[in-house]
Amino acid sequence: MTERARLTDSFLEIVTRRNAGQDEFLQAVRDVAEDVITVEKNNPKWAQAKVLERLTEPDRLIRFRVTWMDEAGVMQINRGWRVQMSNAIGPYKGGLRFHPGVNPSVLKFLAFEQVFKNALTGLPLGGAKGGSDFDPRGRSDAEIMRFCHAFMAELSRYIGPDVDVPAGDINVGTREIGWLFGAYKQSAGAFHGALTGKGEAFGGSAMRVEATGYGLIYFVQAMLAHAGRMLEGQRVAISGKGNVATHAAEKVICEGGTVVALSDTAGTLLAEDGLSQEAVHWVQARKAAGEDIAGPPRRLGLSFVEAALPWGAAEYDIALPCATQNEVDAAAAKQITDSGAILLAEGANMPLQAGALAHLRDSGINYAPGKASNAGGVAISGLEMSQNAHRRFASAAEIDAELKTLMQDIHQRILDEEGGGTRIDYARGANVAAYRRVADALSAMGAV
Ligand code: NDP
Image 1: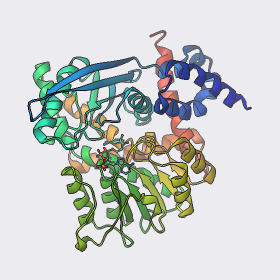
Image 2: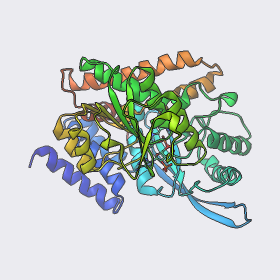
Image 3: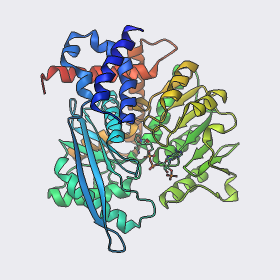
Image 4: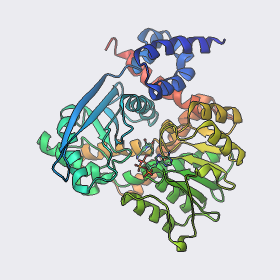
């Protein structure tokens, strides 16, 4: 057993004891610990500060009841949470997710990842995540609005522009952020940017909606350029049909690539010759209407395969999992490498199961972890915070240019960490570069 494996195992024993049964959280911690444990051991200041152990214990985990009334006048009760993981380098920052699968383990994994992702952006942002087990599927607009107001009535006492600044995530888009912000503003008695992802009419940044998907493609372009390739002419398979997936698809098409698949929980849309922008907009409209992607109109030239994954599409060069955590198992990862894909970049957070990640890392495919490749959303949220503070707003073209630069800078930070060369371990580079930044801050502050 190597020194690294021994140190990782004994560290994970402590974390597992404290977080028994929280599988998603333990999976995310293992991924990072394997890469940074010896970095910490070899730096006496960081080892003495027990940086990694502190980063795996949230600053606080807030849980509250959300009570709201449905259309039939029946009282409904949900759980809400906010995990404030670390504010070592800036105010807590991270999205809100409304989904029946939300629980403390999922939110702790997301908050932990967010600490590293936010550090990689180079912006002064700490890490957090929150949400509720509320399922918006089948709920009317009025019910979702009432739920958002009730959720914020509780959450508002724990957030603020210099304290904790939530944004959206699964099932929390611009519309929900509007309802959440309205309730926040009422309860705070002040208009300030305690949420990002707001509508542009009330303090939102241009390009926030597109930022994660577009940023993902800018990051992929940086990876391809480093490998001496271009996106133009490449075939791309994408999972998901939400904000990240469809904006990534939009950008691929703009840049001359071919999107051969998009998917949801009902199945996969395939397009041998590529989806058109019209087809992507049709998918976005279905998502907005709360409908699945079965039965596309004939004019779009798509075929829908029920219960299929996008990774079975014929011939593609790039795989972009953009749906949800652990969506890719080892068999799907094998399908991806068998297809001849040369690159996989994560749009979703931790979309690969442990077995899938091991397979991909062994296969030699060019692999980018979400904490690097999907950081565009939070980066533009960071710019939204500065625009709110200065009360000056930038144009879409300016923000898009900044987004591109931010993603290229993240790519460069990883290259610098890995010492250049042609074979880059993006996962290790991202984990270590982010760790160094947070560790420097935490170890400078003493026992807090
Ligand atoms: P959305 O709510 O916009 O969309 C998610 C979509 O994924 C849903 O429509 C859902 O389909 C689909 N989906 C869920 N599970 C599966 C599955 N197993 N296979 C295929 N499709 C599935 O979410 P986002 O696009 O905002 O987020 C997607 C991922 O990206 C998440 O992991 C999120 O944490 C991450 N992310 C998002 C950011 C953002 O700015 N929005 C920023 C960084 C990361 P259905 O409708 O059938 O349920």
